[in-house]
Image (cartoon, rainbow, N blue to C red):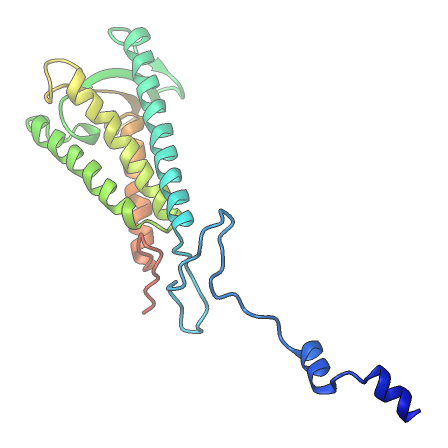
Length: 219
């Protein structure tokens, strides 16, 4: 029996146990679904759990979402204004819910809701500045809610800026087309609505302590 064992040989017990009980190697260089290496410097909360993925793929998705929301808001605003100018301007207002909500086409040289009609050029500069600021913020954008909020702001700003540039009385002095007329309220358009909704969302995110880069500030 001893001779048989010496001929066949016995397995190395420590190595066998080590191979069976060894933990699988951890891959610290985890890959994203797009095949790119994930950023291992993700922010962590008080319990040490990752709360944001700062991979290049995540930032790219957030930027794509921002521009998709902006394009949608812009096209809805542009299409509605073209339809209003073609069908409703110089016509009697259309009642949607009696006197509570009407469609009434007007030309507004001021800001949202008819504010500051004497400062058309200033509001044009402000709109252009907002677009530049949003473009700069997009470079460090990892938060999905911020992507939506900035997309709404961008789409609304582009919608009204288009009117400022291309509508009468002249370049950078054009009057914005407004047509949504609630009772006892200023007349506005879809670009104004997008700007207000984006602004409200940004205020909420700020109160929650969420930054555009996904960092959460806890008091």
